[in-house]
Length: 238
Image (cartoon, rainbow, N blue to C red; front, side, top):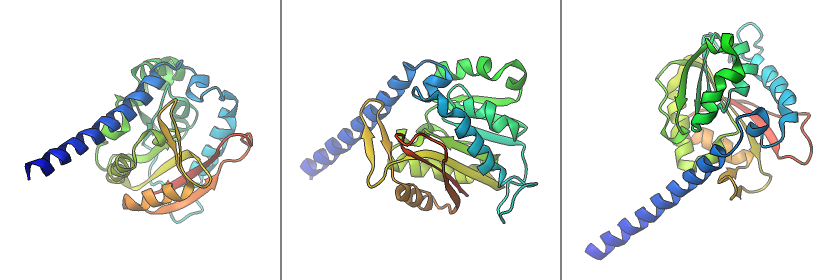
């Protein structure tokens, strides 16, 4: 019995070590990136306008006065930007639609630069800055009208991603909606050793959303992106 127990402990230790290495490598990668829009977009800053324009259209379809869906965001008081970086989405999307925004990112240097990037006046509407990885982030229950998560979920393991989305479900107000915007691989997931991240398939994201106990409301492919880039898709769910 002691031999089996020791082997089990050893196996668990190996899994934990791999998991810690997975997170450490991605955190180290981003800590070395410049706190600029180009840094946030991995050298593809020219896609920012097309990205924001379609996100605005997608988000707008759920806002109370524009919604053509039976699902709509009841209030526009507070949103949270998960994987916020220096605040590109906060500044150009969320602050244009919500009274206040919270930002969460694992890289302290990005959060520190956010006030400069967003601007002194608009920074007054940042309700809170969280320096934390999403695998360790526990948002307050029933607090947010909108949870926006973009180009960050590849840095979570499957189990941590499911657990995080379960916490997001609890963090939404009754009429709140959660949004994901991510790169997609075609046939099977891919792993990038440089920044320690996964690119998942569309079906994997759909399965993960369901596994977290949420249901998909709408999804849409990003338009007007260079063909050489991954497909990018928006998901709305609650």
